[in-house]
Image (cartoon, rainbow, N blue to C red; front, side, top):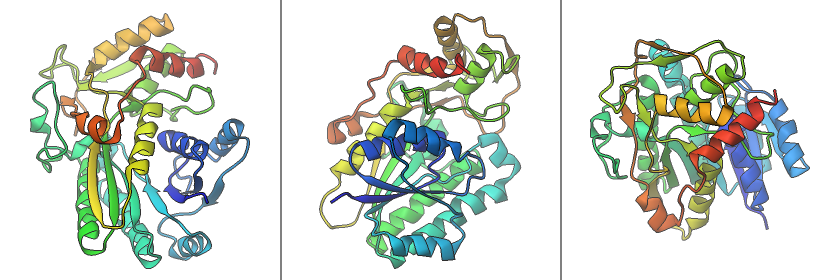
Length: 337
């Protein structure tokens, strides 16, 4: 019998890939989204890949009555929680909105999980929970690295929810797979699922691609005086398909009946600066991409990267998609718009 999984905020870029991957792996997904910053059209693109539409409900996590009806209708085995506001700069401008959306909404979900005895959860966390002063060597931070010292409200919400879930695992017998990552990129190789935000993107790659295909005139690079290889900030970019495969491996690793709180870094292990990403994109797109160096954004840090060896050793997972292939999949979509 198929395992039934509830997924929150499924129409987001990453999580639409997640639905496809888990359905193809023979799990049943039930998906909810309030469509506040996404489009129902994503369901049509998923149908083109799967040849059917998964069960979908347009509902807000704070709508307790509707959520209760959904939990009562399905016998959920797991919950995969992705419902976030996630723009660093915006969180600095609207901290209370981020605390409300990311923490209060999540607590409502956890209450229902406890009520219906659905105590298994994959939590979409982030390397942002690590103390940014620990990103000091090329090996990156291990899962037991020091946390806290967040630099913006969005990162703080991730840290606080990890602490809440850790306590729920200890005192309410939740089983928690806590996956930390950062900077997922690119598009599904079918060309049907992609990252295509409205207006000026918060993330680097869609910003570059929108300039390359003429939707935007110029790329703004926020900060050129960081203590890095070329003065621009450095990140580890992971292909979204590899990232979702990491979720599958984590899900399949779960066994037994005892509570736990397990943490894994899902990373590539290759560090790329903004200017390096720009150069790689120019080679793939055959475009000269105009850019301008501007002031730093509030809340940004110079470098973010982690050690992914635990996921390799325990989950038998590692990222396999090259940066060039990821860029080509992304340009495949943008150049056809």
